[in-house]
Image (cartoon, rainbow, N blue to C red):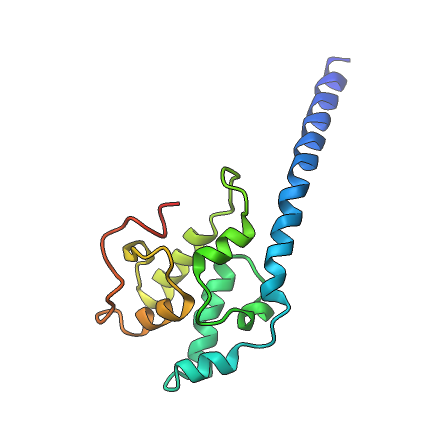
Length: 153
């Protein structure tokens, strides 16, 4: 009998959490539609980075979508002017909710693929295009400074 009561309490608490999370999830989906309705941004990337190969651009965007747990097929929905934190805020419109460590996973991917330390980027408004430039020219980056910004959410 005691086990049934405990299980019932767990089910009720779980259901309450799910119900409370629905508006946040709905808002997140609405905000992400801005990206999902886009056409392929490959032309923007090629125009902005004419010396980069398609494979270099795709590899960088793959590190991003993998970090944010988006589908690989969605990587060219993100353009060079998209701010990392805007995308993060689209996923998590309400502060105070736990996240799935998207920025940290993206940082790990950049470290593994490019030996680039995202924690040194101070500009919270950094765009994907700026990060792409930094990963290609890590010594010339003028946006890298001691940690205070992106990875300290």
